[in-house]
Amino acid sequence: MLKFSGPEKLGKTDYFLHLRNAKFCLAPRGESSWTLRFYESFFVECVPVILSDQVELPFQDVVDYSQISIKWPSTRIGTQLLDYLESISDTEIEEMIARGRRVSEVLMVYAQESEPCSAFSGILGELEKKVRQFHQSAETFLVA
Image (cartoon, rainbow, N blue to C red):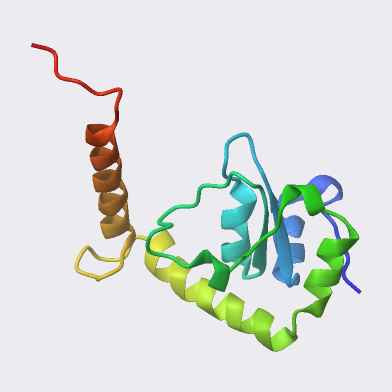
């Protein structure tokens, strides 16, 4: 049986120790389309369960987040979510955590620029994509 708890009754250190024993970490939408809870889950090595329909994750063009997290529609939070999480085997959970560990070691920690997939190269790729989108936008124009 899955149990839910949060930081409200625990100190910050106890909270992270508690998360470290969890299989899943809920990552509800924060004040923006992303949430700190998503990143915390990789540091404590549990599977992030993203509860946001508009989430925009870093390096989405490089990382297949379906392999390291679960995205769940915010309109279906309830027993359906619990049933789904309970149906995932421990082996599958461990594989997701292991893949998440590899991704976080490469992308979320600043590896050397020479690495084929580093945070530095990922950030440059994201910036190049934004520049292309900016130049292709109907709102951009040249002022003579």
